[in-house]
Amino acid sequence: MYLARDMWKKKYFNEKKKSPPLEERVQQLQTDLDQIQKKTVVTMDQESKHAAQTGYLKESEIGSIRVQFTRMQHDIQDIRHQVEQAKLRLTTDVKLRNQAENECRSLRHELNQAKMNLNHIKNK
Image 1 (spheres, rainbow, N blue to C red):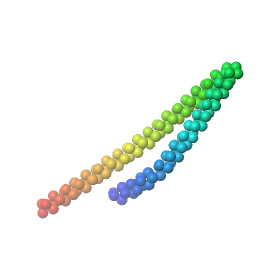
Image 2: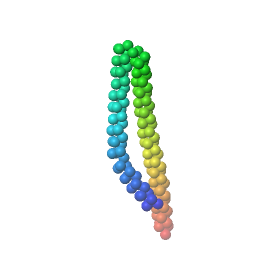
Image 3: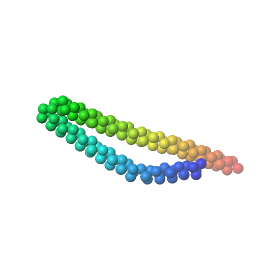
Image 4: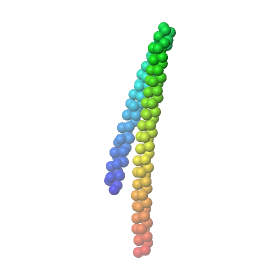
């Protein structure tokens, strides 16, 4: 029982050491994606304004719709990313809670065994 728990802990801590660099990389990629999307929105905005100034009203309207669509897509991606992060945190918290409960049960069992052994020694 202890061997399995120790192996699990060792695997857990090894994986935990790997996660910060990966999280940093994900954050960097997310930042890069945000910048690219913002540049795209700005470019589309400028094109629609230019089209409106030159008299191409329909193209201006289409550009505005595209800009709105791109912004909405970006917002949706942000929300999805937040949901994924929340799921990961929740999963981790649940696993840690289960581990703590199992360890608590194990410690209670050990305590009860120790108490029984002590009572047995006192009775002799």
